Image (cartoon, rainbow, N blue to C red; front, side, top):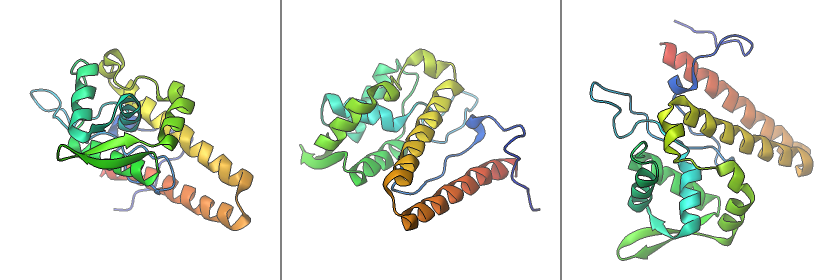
Length: 196
């Protein structure tokens, strides 16, 4: 049965119900935490939590780390309120490498990430926006942390869009419009899928 995407002016489902989808590599899409749903004994390990991208950047600004160490650090700093799954950490690290923000090297047999100069500059410039994604009080309030992650992603998308509008050629601006329109269609598709 065909479903009509929701009217932007009408009511929306809560962001927690929407499953994230991947976006264009050139934008700062938050790949986000896992998709596990709460069970009879509480949320599964892959449950939604905070902003994985922000957490990884902030921790790597302190010291190089491999993926498992990042998971441990996030769990410790959130006082157990958030323990992201490997399936949420490693795609984010790959994205950060694609953006030129981290490099990988083998340390004691582990693939360890280190912030590049560009990554350090990004963290310094956006430290206030990155915030404290492992704040246990915010995480325990539920949807607030996820809303914050989505807001951060929207802000970075807006910044990238403004940059293209300012310095991009007409062809680049036209391509950017196609990318944004496709992202909009995917977002509505998430809500339609969740209603199925």
